[in-house]
Amino acid sequence: MIDETGSQIGVVPTAQALDIAASRGLDLVEVAANVRPPVCRIMDYGKYLYEQSKKAKAAKKKQHVIQLKEVRFRPKTEEHDYQFKLRHIREFLEEGCKVKATIVFRGREMMHKDYGQRVMERLLVDLAEVADTEIPPKFEGRNLSAMFQLKRK
Image (cartoon, rainbow, N blue to C red):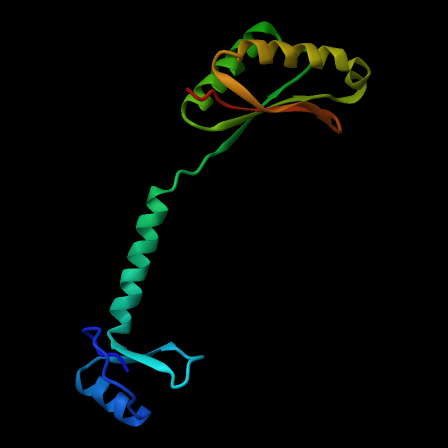
């Protein structure tokens, strides 16, 4: 048995250990159950749980979660719409997000995949100075998509 200060008391019967913990107003917590004899510690278990949750919250605060933003294009996206979406992609990248650019084909547009590929190639060229291509353009069903992340300095 170990007391609240961390010093070792020795081998104590369970009933006596519970009495000692109760007299001090603390809890008896089993630390190592697989060892013979089992190791128990006198501690304020509620305080221990509280400190553990505080540590977990502090660790979670320090994490940086990367968001994924998706911007959708069509094979016949007009110039103004293209520039508008390109500006948004750059803003998302500067915020630290990853961006998935998707060109969506509908119906007979699948007959002219080259239109979508031209839009994607143009996007790759326009984003070359600010972004790295994490996943190169590839077809997934009726969609042509690529993933971008901010260029590392």
